[in-house]
Length: 123
Image (cartoon, rainbow, N blue to C red; front, side):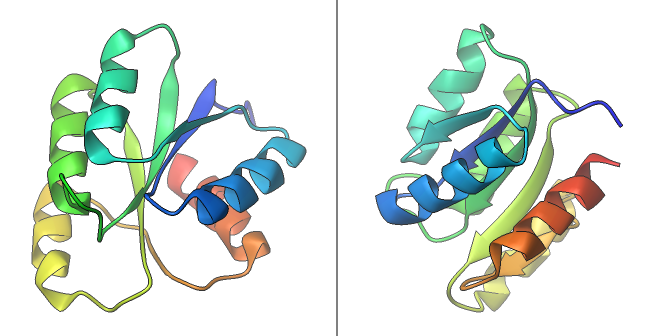
């Protein structure tokens, strides 16, 4: 399997982003970081990096997870997603389904589970 050019982690929790970045980088992936939805949209609009998968927190200020995913889908067709959240945000599930998001990880999770989800989402 060829690894994607980059994975994008979008979360307002810097510790979470750092832990995921270190683990995924150590697993051979290139990782980009965004600490808000608008920052993620700007980063993907730049097009200097090819992003194959975005790992997006559902509960963020400014732009929540579904709004961020919708904006990223418009600007980056073919981008795949894993939604993550520390709360079971039931109202988001209908939106995620409508956006075509098929992968969800509840926080906290084992980093090995994240790696399994990344591999599954990319295939």
